[in-house]
Every structure is written in C-alpha cells, then in structure tokens.
Length: 133
Image (cartoon, rainbow, N blue to C red; front, side, top):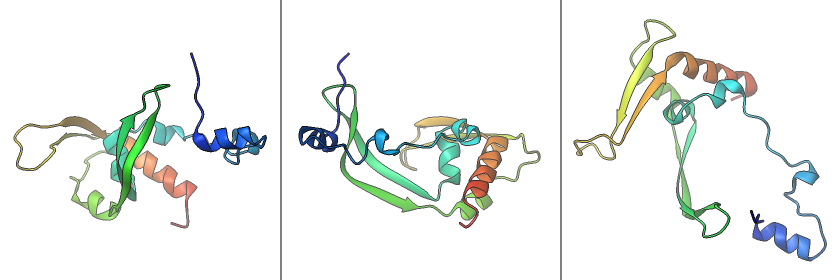
C-alpha cells in the first residue's frame, strides 16, 4: 500500500527541514478518554458546545478525505438542549431518537439510542478535564 503525505509536510521535506506539524516535534493527539470514546454521534452532539458542519469529500488517492468549502461552527446551548430532554427516571434510561433531514419530510434519516448513563459520564469527564469552562 502506498502512503501519502500532506502538501505542508512535503514542502518541508523537499527543503530538508522537519515539518512543524510532525509527530517527531512532540505534536500528537492525546488519547480520547473511554467515557467519551463510547458515545455515539448523537450523544456527542448533545454535550458539544460547538457543532461543526462541513462538506467532506473523498480524495482520489490513498483513501483520504478532505474538507471542501468553508466549515461552519454553530454554537450549541447545552443547557437548553439538556433541559428539553425528558427527565430520566433512572440514570440508565435509554431514549429512542429519530432524526429527519427536514421537519416537513415524513421519513426519518437516522435512528439513535441515547444512553443517558453514557452521556452523563461523558459530561462529567469533560467538566473534570476542563474545569474552568
């Protein structure tokens, strides 16, 4: 399998330099905590402060993807969202959620099960990791 590198790294390597965004420069992503890793797409969106929207396209080589056009970041009112959810009788309650593309459409696009226990555990972990926010 042939591997590909980004244009920024390629231009640095051609000049004989170390790319500034290389792992060798101690630039690496931190591990995702297990409380957040087990959340599904909708559970992540419920506790996210900002929801990014972008058009992601497949690149012709190397099975990589790219963002096409602008990325729009929409702030989310987490407190308002949480207050609009039904009150859980127990922390282990599961909520069935059906999402439509548009309200006027009859059919549903996605079906999700929201596990309140996982959402609350993820929210606690975020508060623990970022106490000042």
